[in-house]
Length: 64
Image 1: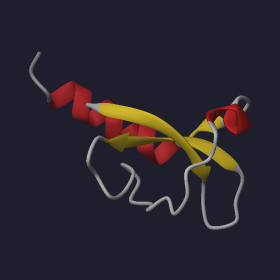
Image 2: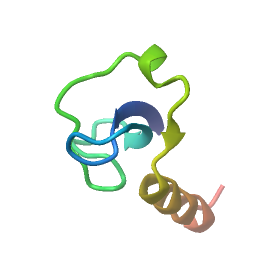
Image 3: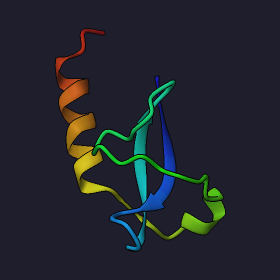
Image 4: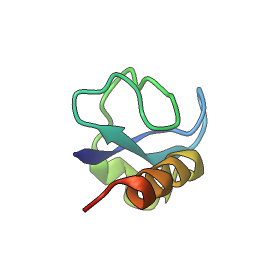
């Protein structure tokens, strides 16, 4: 299972929505989010392109 969480795109960068696998230490793009940011702070944030590309590949290869 996966969840969306808000964090900087890069250290000190703009906020984006990352994909995080439950019980994982890092997002699908490899970032370790050091602190939880409230979802309301990311309401207008875009999605992390690297996380979304990885998630798309996972969903294309995972049997239903």
